[in-house]
Image (cartoon, rainbow, N blue to C red; front, top):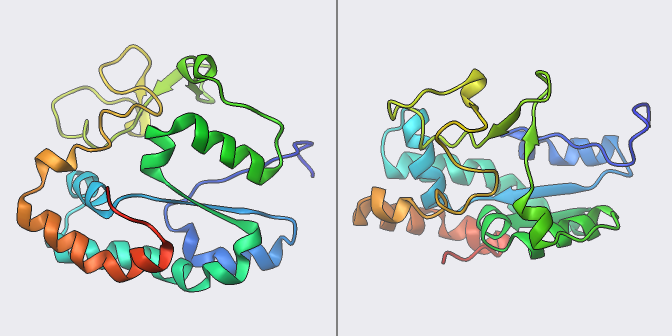
Length: 193
């Protein structure tokens, strides 16, 4: 391509609404859809975004994935669905699956994962997680909600925030979000742990 790179990627929160258009416009493109447990998504999102409760959150989660779930079969050869929880909790397997899917000869070893970092375009400063769990917590947060390395926070692919919803959501919130997202999750083949 114009960049000279063999793999170019982008990440946008609402990109799945445009999956068909992107795949049609770029015949060689592959699509990676990362799906988060709706309970974890709700717990994280309600820190950053005003919501009208668990059912509103479930409606937003369903809206975000319903089109993808409906069209997933038609573009399955060019589409990989991976859960956020697998990406964090089964890092090596998930990253190796992702690499195979996009055609990279790459193997994520535990040593590679321990040294994994994210470097921004601001002079090579390494950044840490921008977890919304840290927002509004009284801790200093850097540019764009990202925390400079060494700041209090979580490392990239850190498992600590993944299951916080278990303690931060009430039993009724957990039930409502899980029940209201069930049809979409079933279509996606995503089961709650």
